[in-house]
Amino acid sequence: MIKRFTLGSPIDTDAVVGRLPVTDISEFPLALETGEKTVISFDLRDGEMIFGLGEAIRGINKRGWIYESWCSDETNHTEDKKALYGAHNFIIIENRFALFVDFAGKIEWDLGYESPSRAKITLDGSDADIYYITGKAPRDMAIRFRGLIGKSYIPPRWAFGYQQSCWGYAKESDFVAVRDRHRENKLPLDAIYMDIDYMDSFKDFTVNSERFPDFQAFVDDMKASNIHLVPIIDAGVKREKGYSVYDEGSERGYFCTDKDGEEFQCGVWPGIVGLPDFLNPDAREWFGSKYDALLDYGIDGFWNDMNEPALFYSKQGLESAVKKLQAIDPDTMDIWGFFEMRNVLFGMQNSYSDYCSIYHDLGGRRVCHKDVHNIYGAFMTRAAAEYFEKKYGKEKVLMFSRASYIGTHRYSGIWFGDNFSWWSHILLNLKLLPSANMCGYLYCGADLGGFNNNVTPDLLLRWLALGVFTPLMRNHRALGTRAQEAYSFENVSDFADVLAVRYRLLPYLYEAFRRASDEDDMLFRPLAFDYPDDKIARETEDQLMLSDECMIAPVYEQNRLGRTVYLPEDMTLLRLSGERVDRTELKKGVHYIDVALNEVPLFLKKGKKITLAEPALNTEELDWETLEIIEG
Ligand code: MIG
Image (cartoon, rainbow, N blue to C red):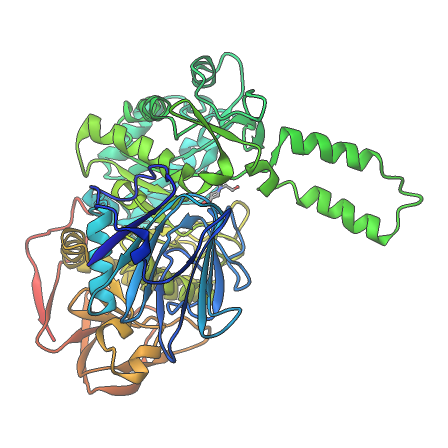
């Protein structure tokens, strides 16, 4: 059952489809304090687990830490952090109830941090819809919640192929080389990403004509070899007279304003930008139609970045920082003055006070950004996706976003942002999957191989062996990091073996994905969902159930020739590598399994089947019909 409680007069966040009748607040079953802030609190029972919060750090069981809903351009995904890029305000208190807090401002989730046996949810505001959901088990509650928020986005089928990205590919020949080297090395590939350097001076919806003298011919040539190009779009629009996107937006009053009603100015990649006011429906429609500049070349995929929105600095913040720095006398500055200077410099990025100085036009009402921060990026992606659907219908354009709110899952996927080439981030990637799924995000994945830092071939192979199962399977890295394309290493054939497994599994994975979307179900589940009475399964957070047939358990530690796996029931271990499938029957219990670097382990439940296709070099060439059936 779902009950909706309304506090004050909340804005429409677009999270929920349809409208539930409102239950009187006197019936709200948990402790509730109202005022400038809203506080919901309740006791936690011994051993009770908490799931949810979508894109967040730490465990699948969220208990024992304090989280924040505040879309953040956070490049360090370490355990001390409270928030990443998305705001997914949904939690499940194991077998009792689930909550969806539909509120676009900041929320603090103390889930047994201050007191291990008490949860306290604090909303920075007094207008919200709170949905109280009951069900017999966590999976039922997740499905019920998903019914409330609407069907998950399904991308075009090619978007399930392997994709290569790098911040640094800049000119035509870079992209051609990536395609050709995959080909020469018999490595499959379906898409190559275009990061910010394809643009002219980082201006959205432009293409640098020196780097791409004949962009149409380039797109056509890629398409002819079954490679989709996926350009990035940033939220900020360069403030430059004569740049039509800026001029139009400015004339029509589509940019966010400051307290005086002037366009808010902040610095991102293009220099000073205006932030489109995606909360204004006219501005949304306008921004969505701008994608035509690339769609008209035949581009059919995009990733929306920097839409938390990320601000390197604001014009006002920079002015005040410069004043403070000018006042410094290096001869008299003491150590505290030095630290203060450092804070002035580093404090400019994504500063809370800047977010408090931005205003939106909500149907004639001026709303401060801090109260709607968590839907800003969501509404950018909504703008794009609504336009794509109007133009082409569903499942034609690949779209995924960095910032998101609940509701974005109907329009697009997400990627998990700037991780590191760290072993621990393979495990973080795994843990993010079921949490994101609960919140509607089925099409998602992390930067395989790691974004920041230098990769090693073993790390990349192990990470790809997890990525084989994630709907978005993209290898991406930051500017200046060690080459991370699958052809960059001596043991290329190991990479070919692992990538082949993705294509062999694709018909099964695609089917499972569609089923999860149709049935509002999860593709990846914690073992605790399926084996709630099994003590070891409950605590296992480095393995996942995949659809209704399988379990996955990737190797995620350095120098390991295998790993320990817990089987909550008898299963068949399939070691997949290139065209090879080795079977081992295993009994319920703990096992050490050997896993070579070129192998992908997959556990199949007894009585269940999966299918395997012949390996292929892209989704077009894949034979989706001729399938071998493997029984567990
Ligand atoms: O300030 O476009 O998360 O994937 O490569 C960094 C450059 C901006 C952040 C994205 C990352 C992308 C990068 N962007």
